[in-house]
Each structure stands twice: as structure tokens, then as C-alpha cells.
Amino acid sequence: MIQLSACLIVKNEAFLLPYCLDSIGAFVDEIIVVDTGSTDETIKIANKYKAKVSQFPWTEDFSAARNHSISCARGEWILYIDADEAIDRVNAGKIHDAIKRKDIMGITVRQCIPQRINNIATAYYSEYCRIFRRHKDVRFKGKIHEQILPSIERLGGKVLRTDIVFNHWAYGINEEKKRRRAERNLRYLLDEVENAPYDPFVYFNLGITYCELGKKDAAICSLQRTIDLYTGNIKRELIGQAHLWLAKLYLELDNFTKTEYHARMVSSYDPANPLSAYILATIAVVKEQYKTAIEHLEHAIQISKGETGLLPSVEMDLAQMYLELGSCRSASGDTLDAEKDFVRSLEYNPSGALPYVLLGNCRFLDGDKKEAEKMYERALAIDSSLVNASHGIELCRANKK
Image (spheres, helix red, strand yellow):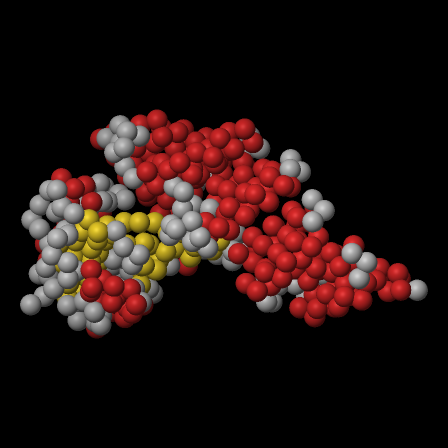
């Protein structure tokens, strides 16, 4: 009996496909690979993993290709996954446990998208229904950003929300490929707007695509349209994300009034997102309202660490968060608690040099020149180019004389 079929649609995915198939090969019963016109080694790799390969001429419609993949599957359950995704053993076990349920038709997972270094957000999570019972009336809809959930809901099927994670390696795509993909998506989404002019989901994805292409004014219009059209017909979290994107865009435009409004609205729709509190802290720092900034940063850290009881939708760089929190405390005159935050920053990133510089500054201000000098020396041992640390040592030694 075939219980679980993994379905993929691919085109020229020879680089990433082996990682995906390695991750699912041990726990799915069959692999369906629908190829839409590869010219590299994609098909050869799929055959190597004993996948059932089907050719499907590209029709500029992701749902059409997805639905073809379903028609090739024989499993009781369908898991749809992309070539740039992978599932580890722990989450594979969770999938097998979930599909034993008799009372459900769909299962949501959390897609984790790691970010590049030097980003305050280290990973983003999005919830999607990616596992569902094979049924003749369960089909994808949408030319792009296709969805399976609406057809399940139309049948009255129960959907189980889970903490199963799919790792998505989108950050590995080069900038040129990202640009081409965004331009392609824009064409499809503009067609979708013509067909569904009152669908907030289409406008949301259109707004994100405009952001990717650097078209800020168009992005703002589309994201605002998402909010204006919302009547409970899409996930609340997406409206929270629309507000968050608007907050980011207005922050870049130095419109702090609109930035603050949209950042505050995020928590009404997506309370598991710590970035709204972080943006509010950023505005407070610009205004030199350090106590307010401290409150927002503490709240952002609390969300990030899961202390609010919700799975955070964004992972934050906690080393950087504590560094900024300590800097705000120091600016407000609380050097004692600032030192504690700098120590916490080092707990999350022991190789950080800047926390040692800031610890040195705190201890210098407290009159402990000996300990301050030690902190500056530790900072220089990590990064010998830190001028502030060298200058700090000079001040400590000058004060000893």
C-alpha cells in the first residue's frame, strides 16, 4: 500500500534536487517528479532516486503543473515539496505521526527560510497546507502562489495545524535569478489581478513582488489594497505581514507616523511576529526615547524566545538584540543592567567583539579601569582593527598615571 506520495514540479534544479530527494527518500513511499522543460541533469538525477518522472509542457500556470503531479500519484496522502526544500528526520517522524489521523484532510507545516548574515531576522516562518489526502476534488488554484487549502475547506475537510518544519533554501539563489523570478512573478500576478480584482491574497503577493523589484510606490499601493479588501477571506497573519511590509517601506521613506501606525497594527493580526516591536524600538531610538525603546526590545525578545506561548514567525539574532538592548540601557544611564545584556549577547555569540567594547565602556564609566582594560583587550583579541577598543585601552592607562 502506498501511503505517502511526494510530488515535485521542477525545471533545471540539478544543483538542489539531490538534497531534497535525499531528505525525503527514506520516509515517503513514492516520489513524483513533474519536469516542465529541464535542459540540465534534473531528469537524470530524478531517475537515480527512482522517482516517477512525467513531462509536462509549461503553460505559465503553477496550479496546472501541481495538479498534474497529483494525478500521477497513488498514495493516500500527498506531500508537495520543492527542489530547494528539505525535511529532517525529526520532522519526517512528525509527518508520519500526523498522517495516522483519521479525522483530518490536510496538515499545515512551517516553511523556514533562513536569511543571509548581518540580518536582524535570521529566519522567517510561513504556514502552509503542504500535506493532504488525495481526493479527486482537492486541487490547486492560482496561476502563481498556488493554494490547496481553499479546495479542502470547500469540502469541509479538517486541517491540522502543526509545528512540522520544511527548510527552504531561497537565500542560496543569486541576485540575478531572484530578479528574473520576480519579473516572471509580476507578469503572472498582473494577470491574476485581471481575473480576481478583489482577491487580497493576489494583491499581497503583488506587493511583495514589487518590493523585490524595488518599486516602493507600487508596493505600498498593492499592500494597502490587501488590507482594504480584507474581510476574513485570507489568513490574519497575511494582513499582519502586509502591515509589517508597509511599516518597513515607510521607515525607509522616513515617514515615522505611518511606520508606527502599521507596526502597531501587526500585533493585532500576527502577535507571533517580533519585528513589529523591533521597528517600534528603532523609531524610539531615533527619537532618543531610550526607555520606550527598551520596552519594545524586551517585548521583541520575549516573542522571539517563544515566551508569549506562540511559535515565533520570525527568528531574531538574539546576540544583536541584547547588544542593542544593552546600548539603550547604557544611553539611559543604567550601566548595571546594560552590562548584563552585553553578557547575554556574548552567550548567544561568544565570538562577538563589540559586546566586550561596550562592557569596557560601562566599567570605565563605573571607575573600574582595570576591568575595562581587560574587556578592551578581549575585544582586540577577536578583532584587532577595533579603534574604539584601542582608544579605550589608552584612556585606561592614561587614567592610571
